[in-house]
Length: 387
Image 1 (cartoon, one colour):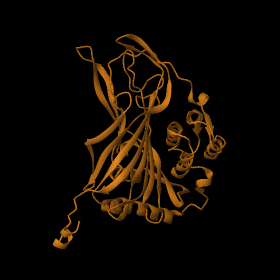
Image 2 (cartoon, helix red, strand yellow):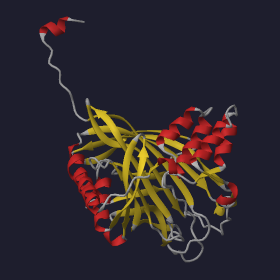
Image 3 (cartoon, rainbow, N blue to C red):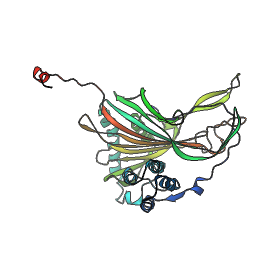
């Protein structure tokens, strides 16, 4: 069974950290709002500047998931890039929440026989349909966001105090991804990064083209999978299952670079990669007619005071035309990761970190799908004579 993971890659500086200052609690600074309430608020704010709209959006916290269809509609009516990024952050942070009531279909739950048939369809889809994907190429376009916890750190110039910054844009990157012979390969040589203020650091994800789905479904069948609800998504009726996977049956690994593991003779910190198998829970949203999975979320169950207290990924799949044929491929993913990046004083414990953790948020879109391979055209003399 292939492992799948979220990996956090950070530039590490061997600095001693003092007691961290707690930022203003999120609940005190932000107003909880429903999707319908957000739509009404934006409708009433037409005419405001881009900066004003961005500031207003940054003060909200959604209590329901903002669907891609509604997001696109709201984004089209925003005045500029700042407010559009603020809306994207708001939507991505809602990716693991339940949908609004008007997107929940109030049909009767399937009986035991129908539920078993749905599970069979999902397994057949993963085992058969996914294997029929052609060799293809796509571009993984990642927009990265992060916050900055308040802290005091010892640097070469002395003690530096850093104030809290909310989640904000840090950079974009485009990476060519090849899916060949049912294996996913990232072409690092073809990576083109747009940088602001230095190198882009943050999460990397992999396995969206098959291994991820097959691993989650296999884990869920060994763990616990139960009926959740019917819901409406872009005009289609989806069935949703809850999944729970204990760590002994999980193939989900959370990675983090790097953890101080004592000190070397030079006085520098001896670093190691945090790599831990995690239990997780989530949802599988699929087409009940053929078992095709269109939405998948998983959230790791990590110790609340651990080095990595939170990690999760939400994936969306849709119909993509490749070489004149239609296939279901990943179209979007949202990854969230929280980690303690400051070294503790004295003995380091991976389960008793104090103070706030740093949040990383990645919004990924898969674009520019095309078949992987070469094409040959045979030209006759008559063809060659024509310009």
